[in-house]
Image (cartoon, rainbow, N blue to C red; front, side, top):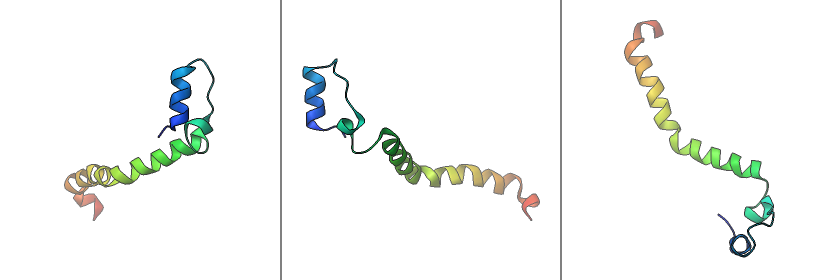
Length: 64
């Protein structure tokens, strides 16, 4: 989430270079990693089913 100060600076002076710290706490890499982890937590169960169900249905004999 962008800070109010960052939004105001972007509106009133759009050509000024902004730093990562002004956009979010920490580095851009840390922000990207935290977003990846949150997305992974919310979707991993679906991907597990998508890959596990066909394996169990079509290759059941090979698993035994």
